[in-house]
Length: 201
Image (cartoon, rainbow, N blue to C red; front, side, top):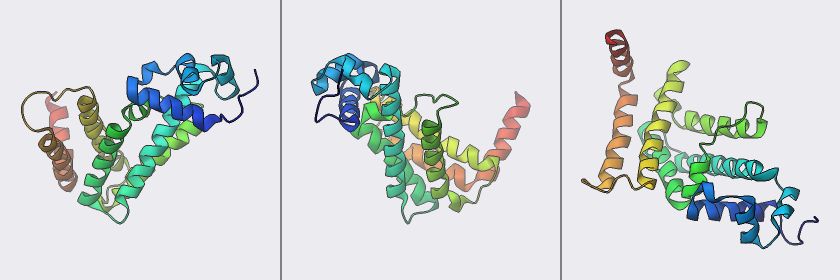
């Protein structure tokens, strides 16, 4: 079927983003997106390779947006200030586009060059922002994984309304970030603690 005049791939991904943000990534199907933009579901094959291709494009957009947000937020900042900026940028995307953020964690196929490059760019953006801690080699990877998983864990819990009881959520967020900053400024102690824990286990 010929593509409808006035609709392009950007419109398709915009519609998928709206649906994901409103109803979750699982709501993104060819039928739901086609209904959103006013075309037949079969028409979407002109733009994407089925629902898997549609969600792949959504994931790609999410990773690009996240990397762009972190890059802008960390401009001119270093070390502790950069940690705050990275953490806030991740959380901001999860709040403004929860479905798009959720799509960023979809695993990329080994041979998917475009998604792999987007993931690499995200990693290098964070690495560049944290270079002031002067960690190299494997230690740099551990540091970046640390902040990514800590903040991701927080925002996913927040997105799923897991902080319904007890203390103020903003204070919890501050403490999560502060914990990362403390660890990065005392990295030798963290490494030693990790070695001690491994020996005990």
